Image (cartoon, rainbow, N blue to C red; front, side):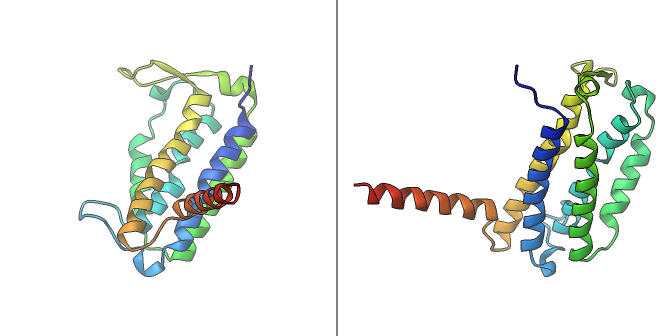
Length: 184
């Protein structure tokens, strides 16, 4: 059996966070107030949302809750996240927040033993499945970040930038094509 543990979760999360930080660094600060539509987050708000996104899972698992119905911090957490997104910050502050929050969460993931990751947590009534492993739950911050990072990549296109991952893929394709034409 192949084992994917806390160190692997941390490494994968760090890769995703580093790609987000690259986007944050490439977008000019003058574009951090850009939003795709009136009811959408700005680029800056999206980056802050990503930075603080893992806090829900971090709070559940660092406190070893085994039943999310026993955790009554959802309204408090939503208020905190909304306030964080609304707080004016410079680009440098947002990038620093992405680094700090990302390092803190990745370090937490790295410390988790296999037995802890295998523990089951009871979900709220009506959720399917009724329980999840901590491992499955701790995958969600990375998935959440990748969802919002995809939005940022579209926003980059809207402000006239080509995302770094697209540029890198194009470079690899060009190298492969150049290698194939040399082999003929």
